[in-house]
Image (cartoon, rainbow, N blue to C red):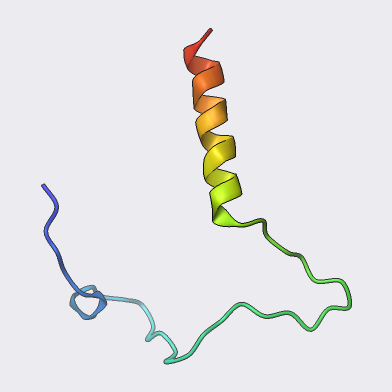
Length: 52
């Protein structure tokens, strides 16, 4: 069963910053593919395992 809640109700070891984004000052920063591509790859891997 899932029960809706808020982040404020969870105890955290340190407070989260009000504004935090991933950033990089590197000349050639690491980039991630769109999440949709990751979902497709994961589902394809699951299908491959299931077909064995």
